Length: 242
Image (cartoon, rainbow, N blue to C red):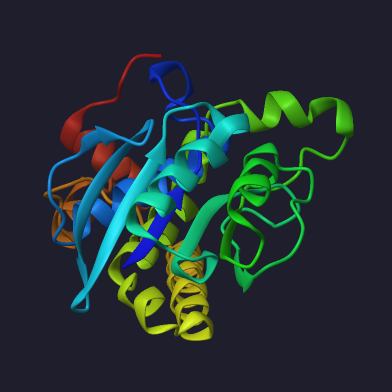
């Protein structure tokens, strides 16, 4: 069995926080693949299913971020899993928004959820970091992390999570670099489409339903005001008072 854990904080208050991108990723995998309904166990919300024929457990710890390891380790003990059977998905400040990195082992980088999992589960598990960007100064980190994604973030957030969900079977096959390529291409493809739309030449604005003929008819010719023709027109139509 493969256990895929997404990190976040429980409750509606935190649902759309940048810190909850791990939960969002797990929800996307659940929606777009064959998994059973969510249930509560191991101090978490869990769902069982398969990816490419391998049994998979999705888990969203409900212990709050700092105690994530308590929940994940309980599930691992129950299923007799090793760190190599675990993938953890979480937010990364030091990656640009929408970028992803996947590797086995490493440090917690100041992430309290990862610090907790390291302490309870060991360190040799796969870590899928999803970039949320850095606000620029340390004093703004907490408000940035615990702030909701902005509307403009959806341009990269949705294609990133969809690409992960559609290619999650690669995690079961150990095709980590191929998965990173799929996610990068999904994001770059979206950016190229947006660029192409922005560079599309603007069409001339014309009143709807008006043809060139109508335009010509609406155009009033300039009449002479002096000379023989002007005199003739005055005699035919009469002179206008000023």
